[in-house]
Length: 339
Image (cartoon, rainbow, N blue to C red; front, side, top):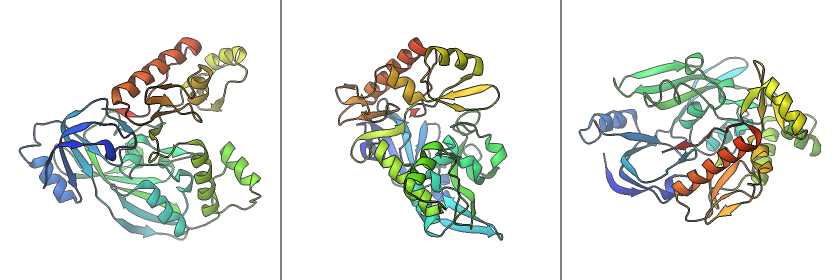
């Protein structure tokens, strides 16, 4: 176990913020993780788990241990006539996992192509895009109980998934460290979900009448690269805010005042609004304050143009939240985890 002191985190997060971890250590196996958590330096000290660093903003230096999850592995658990169940290590890069499935004609997560980060972050956020969420295909999470150091198998239902939510982000936050995720995939290369508007429209524009798993993945990648900045070129964490859901009655009032408001059907008497549209209507799209800014093509994405501090990005997000609330009476929630 190698513990690094005063470790720079800039290259370990997609925001590329110049933050320093007081202590940094990596683990590649469950035994290594248990050893780390049992060691005197870590016991009684605060720590966080870091995967791909794609959904986190360090608002300053971290005065504790940053434990980086490097557990990899791809294992077929079982198969039926229609499906195959595969377990992926939490440290695997998510897009690499999607490409593995696409290249083997295993369907179910092709709509989630090009989402940055690692497998372990998937259940925490219940990642989703273009009409598909991880909860639709996840069957089980293997996780280490931080207190007992015992491995627990957590079912889909036990994860209590919601829109960018799970127990790992709410009631059990910090209680578990995700080790692996098992996903149910289809063996039918043409069993795809193209119900999402922009995805369906792009596939139709391309003249594809019977899309395959690979067609969907390629199209999603095309759309994402045209709309979202590459974290390797401009620091960002993708969508910074959740799309807010409001009561249908409140939406009706907003719709009468703003006929062009962008919305999506939700459930339980709620309507989901496009956070990016709300932010853009408040004039934030393309705004830049030093090296902190709002992306010129997608108002939902906050960016670090070079040397912005985490605090500057956070303060910008605060101003946007207050601005949207003041204009529309809707309070945005951050999707990105603030440390």
